[in-house]
Structure formats: C-alpha cells, structure tokens
Length: 170
Image 1 (tube, rainbow, N blue to C red):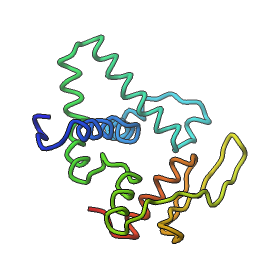
Image 2 (image 1 turned 135 degrees about the vertical axis):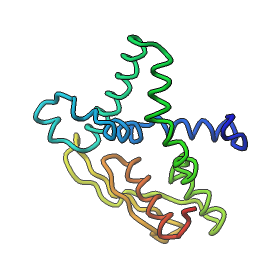
Image 3 (image 1 turned 60 degrees about the vertical axis):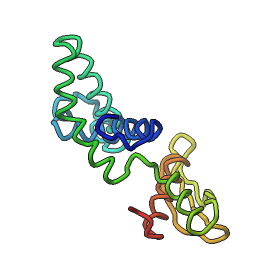
C-alpha cells in the first residue's frame, strides 16, 4: 500500500492475488531453476501443462516454507523480494491483476452498453478430460472464442480474445 497509494484495498488485494497465483509462481520457479531439481514420475516428467505448473508453484512455496523453518524470516524475505516481488511492476503496469472477464464486461458496458454472454460452443474428450470451446457474445454477435480444460478457463481465454479483437487492451 505504500508503493501504490492510489489503489483501493480491493485493487491491492487483486494485485497480490495476481502475484501469488500458480502461473506467476511457476514461472519464477522455472526461471530460478527449480525444475532441474524435481524428481518426477515418467508421466509427470512428460507433462508440460497445468499439472507441471502446479508442481512448480508448489515446489516454490514448499521451498519458502523450508527456508523459513531452517533459516528464518529475514532469509525468506530477501528470497521473495529477489525472485517474486519484481513481477509486481509488470502486473501493475499491464493491469494483469484485472482478470479478462471483469475487464471485458466493464469495457462492453462502457462502449457498447451490453453485458457479455458466454456460451459453450463445443465440448470434447472423456468426462475426466474435457476440453471446452466457449464463445463470448455481445447481444447476438459472436465476438471471440476461447478454449480450455474447464469452462472457466475457456471463458477467460474468450474474454482475452475479445479484448484483443475490440482493441480494448490498455
């Protein structure tokens, strides 16, 4: 709050959430070489998707816990400030703390006076491994599509594409 005094409490919470999500943390873990020290099963080793992302994020978090128990708060504080906190500037400058669905809804209401509607256009795969294609509509107009392993992920991707199509990225 000292570094970003013009942001509301809710916005600061969203920025913190964006900073400590699995995507950012796994990128940090990968960048500092944690992947090189993981012993994985053959199946896990082949997977470069979401499962690997969560393994890396969990590894980073576990490492922080172990360092805290072994060496104390000051060492952990320095490690986090060196490896994770530098991402805050990018998150704030690119407004990555605002999820695409919220941003596209705000822009759609501001510029075209509609609330976006999301519809599942296609589902494929077995029940335990579904893949979804979702369309985002402004009224009856299909604006963009997104794909993902969950409806929520596909909706976020569709919203991201809609922001690009409409040139609403800031």
